[in-house]
Amino acid sequence: MTIFSQKSCFIILALIISPSVSATRASKFQAEKPCKRMVLYYHDKLFDGTDKDKANATSATVVNASKLGNSYFGMLVVFNDPITNDDKFHSPPVAKAQGFYFYDRKDTYTAWFAYTLVFNSSEHKGTLNIMGADLMTEKTRDLSVVGGTGDFFMARGIATFQTDTFQGLYYFRLKMDIKLYECY
Image 1: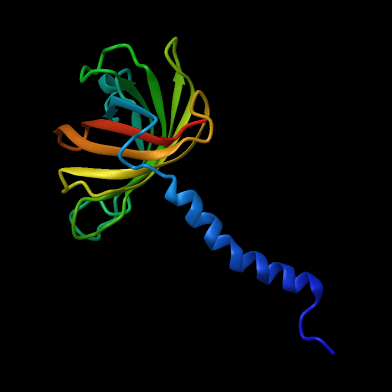
Image 2: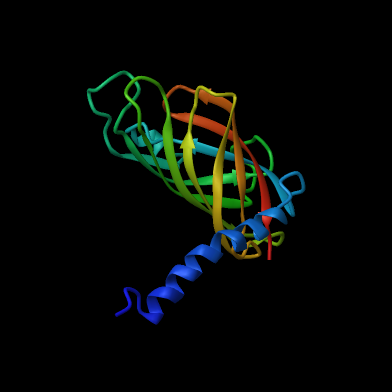
């Protein structure tokens, strides 16, 4: 009587072999040479609750901050923010950032982002999906590019954030240095 069936042996063999396949793929990865690089500016204008702000607001708080800590812990913001080639809020957008972020620590200002850059211009068509922790007290922060469509089909890479300006709770601008290492 055998302990493993033929199917079980195949699964075990596949699990043993798969790390070497991953290692082979990883050895071809060249982190120093992105296949595509873009520097873009992300503008977030949080709705402040006044009628005069409705026209310019690009994001809104959908869950208020808790009373735990001094860092907006628990606050959830949904956004449809303009992405530009320069640092001007009113420049023509090259994409829209559509998604959310929430403040995830009680003791310091950090947020967790998940969003899609939606491109629909003469230069690019398609999407890039970006997610990860934004450790706002750091000078630069890396978030993961986890996929894309169109011109960015199945792209992977890093989006390095740098706070370009911060005007209280209601406006901030990030410089995003996007480096793609898998391009198809």
